Length: 410
Image (tube, rainbow, N blue to C red):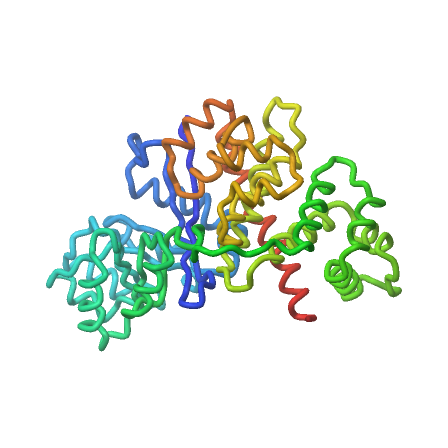
């Protein structure tokens, strides 16, 4: 049986806000479709993932999708919503008149066209009036050459997107020469070499996360933790009292906690944990932390293990702390009162939790060879793994809806 895979990689703007996701589809570990025509595979995968899980996969963001030559000339992208679909022309496509006719027709119909991994050639010049975005792989086309290209094409009013931006310095340099959109993993690495002391409130949040990781939540202990931190207690009561469902004012911490219920309480504390860090981090970094937490938790539930599901949640959520605090992960983990299984997974990728974290990271980056290897090691089911990924994305989107509600009232 053939299985399909999907991963998404965030695309950020100058303010490091997420504007879209590139959706990466494959049928297996070799990133190929050995038994299926590429165009049929593209159609099937788009139908299964872009339409079936559209809202949970990209929410209200843009979805960047690669289309092979035949799919483009057959106008396959027009089968899908144009408002948040970016049609990427693969670099392997030949710039024929047939392709130009199709691109012109789609652009005139309101579809956003992007040239992927663009290398300047005169044959592409007729396509520029219908192109909204040019993606440049800065590993293949250096920034100094990109600067000259951006200047030359400025009259065309094209958005330039830098791919494979891996450091904060590259992000700053790309921004300075005219790129306004960015794709890569620079946001998940420390931006500066400095030390930021962890606030006491964050350590309290870690203890809260420990409590919500237990199958049976101890509300008395949660009440004690909230009561010792003014900032957290204020956030809790403000959030609960702002709910349109509330009929009488909540006056005690325990009353507020019980009102939220286990599921919403776990979401609220997770949100507070992630947003207790620096304000200048990309929003995709916060959402990725939460998404990893849920993905790890769901995978752990499928394993024959005596490890509590909540420890999977903590492993995923804390896996990006080094990026959030600009400190080595090992130092941060040493300061936190968390389970040793979680510490080993985070620092040395050891144990089942370590395997799960490696699997989640591989899935995010569409490293299907590693996904298959770890999947087989853990004896996981392909369909459930794909479903868990979609569920983790949806869970994260729901949580960030809570965040927007909170900020709207702040």
